[in-house]
Image (tube, rainbow, N blue to C red; front, side):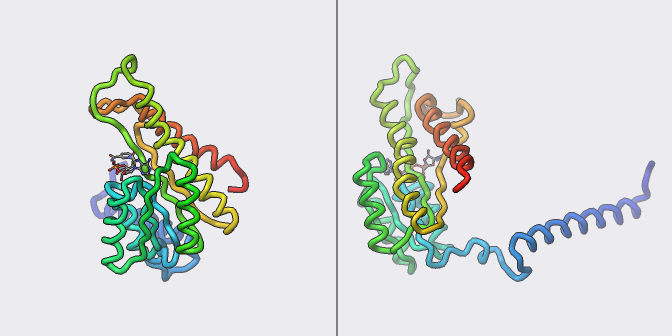
Amino acid sequence: MRQSAATQEAHDERNVEIRNGWAEEDIRHTLKSKTMSVPDIFDLTDRVALVTGAARGLGRAMASALAGAGARLVIADINGPGAQAAAAELQASGHDALPLTVDVTQPADVDRMVQETLRAYGRIDVLLNNAGINYGGEFPPEDLGQCIWDEILAVNLTGVFLCAQAVGRQMIRQGRGKIINMASMSGIIVNRLTDRHPLSYSVSKAGVLITIACALSQPCW
Ligand SMILES: NC(=O)c1ccc[n+]([C@@H]2O[C@H](COP(=O)([O-])OP(=O)(O)OC[C@H]3O[C@@H](n4cnc5c(N)ncnc54)[C@H](O)[C@@H]3O)[C@@H](O)[C@H]2O)c1
């Protein structure tokens, strides 16, 4: 059945109203209040966020965003001077930021990272497992050295495990906390649009992805 333009317009308007109505209801239900703004929803005032690999790149940008939301930051990176520079930049704009030189593949470093964070801030509310590596160049699987395989898995996967375990134990003691693991689309596809070797990187990121399913399968988490 054909509708006149006016009827169609009224119909569209009604649909928009219904959609908006549903969205507003959802938000109201989630927030239990009509008055919360977006910055309120993401407010991290006095929360402590620890970001690994935060000396540069995505980690540095996400650390800055977390600080902007009010969090007190730990900038953990194997690149000590880079961590100090990133922390100094946050401090210069009035944020709390603690730089730590940490190799996420080393259990002793990871334990020290947790202890120094607790000494400085007393708690850890957010862990962003961001540190990750890959190598450029052509490495057909038959020529891939085991040292490259081992190193990529050590940082991208074992590092995630070590940090999540050490920080997770503290979060269990606190009774709350959030862990975010940086994966990649390379964990579910073979990315041919890059000159980087996909095998070990993709395997590491597929491993990171399954950590989410494992976490969700734990009733206590
Ligand atoms: N850049 C992208 O397009 C992209 C896409 C998907 C996922 N990711 C993932 O996001 C994360 C960050 O990527 P990026 O592009 O910003 O990388 P990047 O190379 O710019 O930064 C990585 C940081 O991790 C640090 N790091 C490396 N090894 C470490 C170790 N053993 N211990 C502690 N820190 C270590 C480095 O010093 C560096 O500061 C990685 O996990 C990466 O796999 C990146």
